[in-house]
Length: 187
Image (cartoon, rainbow, N blue to C red):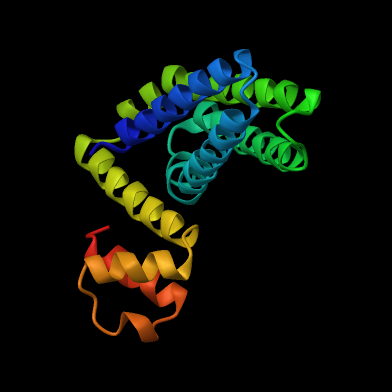
């Protein structure tokens, strides 16, 4: 899959979660808000990790000053999201600041995603061939698999290794399991 399309799909998945969060907030459903917040944080953390590990380094100097500035700004926008996530984690869903901070987080992420899609992605599409964008997609997917696995417990990894019929899984460390699962999954 084209790397830019993979990133756009991530954006759309988070936007959908934001819509669900807003509906839960309007209904004052703090349990649902808390559950959705966990999903949102997970999606954002995996997405920002793969962008910072694969995408931004690839494009930082590829397109001149404008693309470099966009990339530098994107790193800072990710930092703001990280700060907000940590602040929100310290609050309960019934705390009035919780909804306010989540609103600021969602607005920042929506602005960031729109900027990437409308300004950065078209420049990247002009600079790189379709084959390069496909390779980018493979690298992003491999990074996603690694980051998803690192968020799993060892028992969850053992169960996934069992599903993949990985021998010796019970003797493997969490890191070894994640690596072997990633290798077997073709990522």
